[in-house]
Length: 208
Image (cartoon, rainbow, N blue to C red; front, side):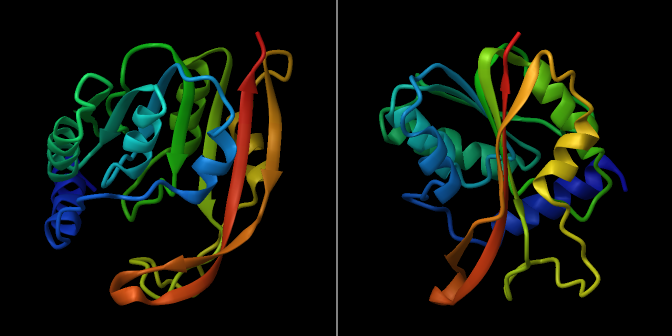
């Protein structure tokens, strides 16, 4: 499908939702990154911006990228209103065609799933190469579908973290897997609905 189709779809998703005033960070980000020293971070598919704002409050300089101009605009305004405009740069990117410039100490890709064609392995490989030495790539994928997910395909398959790592085909002399797991948690959706879900968590560190 075309870039326009994808951008229109995601703009529609965010337009249909009230603008978040205090978006929460993803649980896996908070538990993984809390003890890391702040540096330069890249949030791929930033959405409402909970991760970007959480990182910025802890001293990180964050580039937040999303295909939705609605999401990017909302995040930029929210960051300024929170006094974090100097720490959060929100950029619109169709990650099939462009990738934010720079070197990063942390790159996050939380639930980077889409109904549109996306070569995720290529994208995540590009992200791994954008890490500085000792930088980390955190990939958190759905390991199960919530009742409110846009993807209700009963035949949907959720690759395990080590499958995702294998697809990246990174040189083990320069990148190492620090974490690979499938923890469960209680997720809260629209209207306060809750469900137990599985996350697939992959943490890769660049060593050289």
